[in-house]
Picture 1 (cartoon, helix red, strand yellow):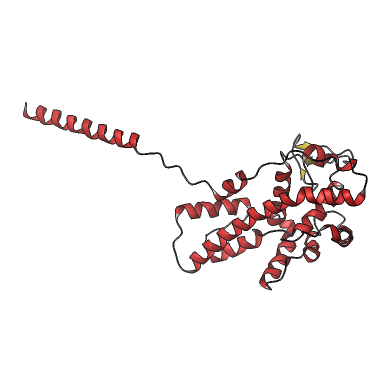
Picture 2 (tube, rainbow, N blue to C red; picture 1 turned 180 degrees about the vertical axis):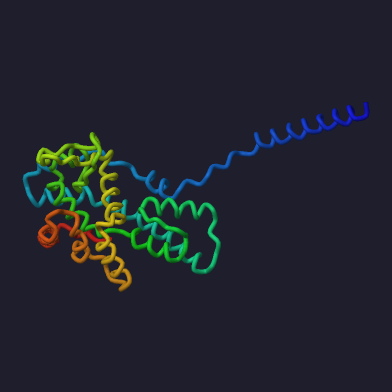
Length: 270
């Protein structure tokens, strides 16, 4: 009988504690996990899903201005996202160099940036963060504008109009994009389709900032940074030698376009 009374009392006490705990859980608001810096920045973009009919503009000068004016704010916004990511990494690097311990949230944010820019880091340390900074950097506005004009025929190609693809980016799975009419026999690539113009600009910038084909581009930019020099399009264009099979001829064509359209790029480099 004594043991039974103790058991009943213990059970009753346990039920009271459980009831109090349940009430506290119900009253305390749920604390959401902080949104990742990558998602937060990308979700701030208001997608552009309408492309003007540039081919209907007969005046060449007017068409060029319209094309640049259309893309410029989109490019600026994507560069602003990259600049914010870069500032975050720089802040984290300063903490690491001061032997501060990064929080779990900060480490998670950094790991998402490592993934986004395709950098395999064994450890989050000064070396890996400095390497990441070589990838997470802005791209001169004038270079983006000129390359978009070249790759999209000043916004008149069907890839730009139908797939929001302004930079000729390819994909390689069946149905991932638009099959080019000039695709050779045995070729399987398609021209990638994007959900918005912003997505196309973002993908292009991430491609230059992460793909091994553009290591030279990133090295030139890092050297300019080290010299505290302007990130100028006429120097960085040389890093695009692997963007086209035409290589040096492609570079010459972009530089020529840059020179001939200088007067339309009055709001160029960031």
